[in-house]
Length: 115
Image (tube, rainbow, N blue to C red):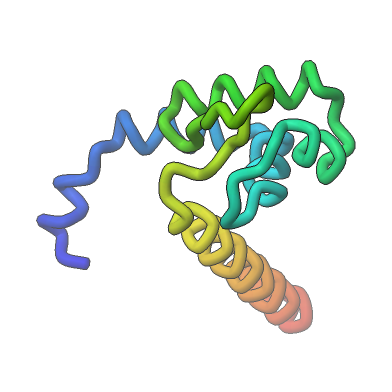
Protein backbone atom coordinates (compact mmCIF):
# COMPACT_ATOMS: atom_id res chain seq x y z
CA UNK A 1 0.00 0.00 0.00
CA UNK A 2 1.43 3.36 -0.97
CA UNK A 3 1.85 6.20 1.51
CA UNK A 4 -0.92 8.08 -0.36
CA UNK A 5 -3.35 5.22 0.34
CA UNK A 6 -2.61 5.51 4.05
CA UNK A 7 -3.31 9.23 3.94
CA UNK A 8 -6.79 8.45 2.57
CA UNK A 9 -7.76 6.18 5.47
CA UNK A 10 -10.88 7.39 7.22
CA UNK A 11 -9.33 7.19 10.67
CA UNK A 12 -12.43 8.41 12.48
CA UNK A 13 -14.73 5.81 10.88
CA UNK A 14 -12.18 3.04 11.36
CA UNK A 15 -11.80 4.00 15.00
CA UNK A 16 -15.56 3.97 15.55
CA UNK A 17 -15.88 0.57 13.88
CA UNK A 18 -12.97 -0.91 15.84
CA UNK A 19 -14.57 0.45 19.02
CA UNK A 20 -17.79 -1.43 18.21
CA UNK A 21 -15.81 -4.58 17.38
CA UNK A 22 -13.68 -4.31 20.53
CA UNK A 23 -16.50 -5.77 22.61
CA UNK A 24 -15.89 -9.56 22.79
CA UNK A 25 -19.59 -10.41 22.94
CA UNK A 26 -20.17 -8.56 19.68
CA UNK A 27 -17.46 -10.61 18.02
CA UNK A 28 -19.08 -13.78 19.37
CA UNK A 29 -22.41 -12.65 17.93
CA UNK A 30 -20.91 -11.90 14.51
CA UNK A 31 -19.14 -15.26 14.45
CA UNK A 32 -22.34 -17.08 15.48
CA UNK A 33 -24.26 -15.46 12.63
CA UNK A 34 -21.94 -16.82 9.99
CA UNK A 35 -23.03 -16.33 6.40
CA UNK A 36 -26.73 -16.90 6.98
CA UNK A 37 -29.56 -14.81 8.39
CA UNK A 38 -30.45 -16.19 11.81
CA UNK A 39 -33.10 -15.48 14.43
CA UNK A 40 -32.10 -13.99 17.76
CA UNK A 41 -32.88 -17.30 19.47
CA UNK A 42 -30.13 -19.01 17.43
CA UNK A 43 -27.64 -16.32 18.41
CA UNK A 44 -28.63 -16.71 22.08
CA UNK A 45 -28.11 -20.46 21.85
CA UNK A 46 -24.78 -20.21 19.99
CA UNK A 47 -23.26 -17.57 22.29
CA UNK A 48 -24.76 -18.51 25.66
CA UNK A 49 -25.66 -14.85 26.20
CA UNK A 50 -29.06 -13.77 27.46
CA UNK A 51 -31.61 -12.54 24.94
CA UNK A 52 -31.46 -9.08 26.51
CA UNK A 53 -27.68 -8.98 26.14
CA UNK A 54 -27.81 -10.22 22.54
CA UNK A 55 -30.47 -7.64 21.66
CA UNK A 56 -28.37 -4.86 23.23
CA UNK A 57 -25.31 -5.81 21.17
CA UNK A 58 -27.30 -6.39 17.97
CA UNK A 59 -28.65 -2.87 18.29
CA UNK A 60 -25.10 -1.47 18.50
CA UNK A 61 -24.01 -3.60 15.53
CA UNK A 62 -27.08 -2.52 13.56
CA UNK A 63 -26.52 1.17 14.34
CA UNK A 64 -22.90 0.78 13.22
CA UNK A 65 -24.14 -0.62 9.90
CA UNK A 66 -22.56 -4.04 10.40
CA UNK A 67 -25.76 -6.11 10.61
CA UNK A 68 -29.32 -5.74 9.44
CA UNK A 69 -32.56 -7.13 10.75
CA UNK A 70 -35.21 -8.71 8.53
CA UNK A 71 -38.70 -9.40 9.82
CA UNK A 72 -39.94 -12.85 8.88
CA UNK A 73 -43.36 -13.52 10.31
CA UNK A 74 -43.17 -12.97 14.05
CA UNK A 75 -39.37 -13.17 14.16
CA UNK A 76 -36.50 -10.89 13.31
CA UNK A 77 -33.58 -12.54 11.52
CA UNK A 78 -30.18 -10.85 11.61
CA UNK A 79 -27.66 -10.93 8.80
CA UNK A 80 -24.31 -9.33 8.15
CA UNK A 81 -24.58 -6.42 5.74
CA UNK A 82 -21.44 -7.72 4.06
CA UNK A 83 -20.15 -11.21 4.78
CA UNK A 84 -16.62 -10.08 3.89
CA UNK A 85 -16.52 -8.75 7.45
CA UNK A 86 -16.01 -12.33 8.65
CA UNK A 87 -13.11 -12.72 6.20
CA UNK A 88 -11.56 -9.49 7.48
CA UNK A 89 -11.93 -10.60 11.10
CA UNK A 90 -10.38 -13.99 10.29
CA UNK A 91 -7.49 -12.32 8.46
CA UNK A 92 -6.92 -9.93 11.35
CA UNK A 93 -7.03 -12.84 13.82
CA UNK A 94 -4.42 -14.72 11.73
CA UNK A 95 -2.24 -11.61 11.51
CA UNK A 96 -2.47 -11.14 15.27
CA UNK A 97 -1.58 -14.79 15.93
CA UNK A 98 1.46 -14.55 13.61
CA UNK A 99 2.50 -11.22 15.06
CA UNK A 100 2.38 -12.51 18.63
CA UNK A 101 4.37 -15.62 17.65
CA UNK A 102 6.99 -13.41 15.97
CA UNK A 103 7.21 -11.20 19.05
CA UNK A 104 7.52 -14.22 21.34
CA UNK A 105 10.32 -15.54 19.12
CA UNK A 106 12.13 -12.22 19.22
CA UNK A 107 11.80 -12.03 23.00
CA UNK A 108 13.06 -15.60 23.33
CA UNK A 109 16.07 -14.83 21.16
CA UNK A 110 16.85 -11.68 23.15
CA UNK A 111 16.51 -13.58 26.46
CA UNK A 112 18.68 -16.47 25.24
CA UNK A 113 21.42 -14.09 24.12
CA UNK A 114 21.35 -12.25 27.44
CA UNK A 115 19.75 -9.15 25.97
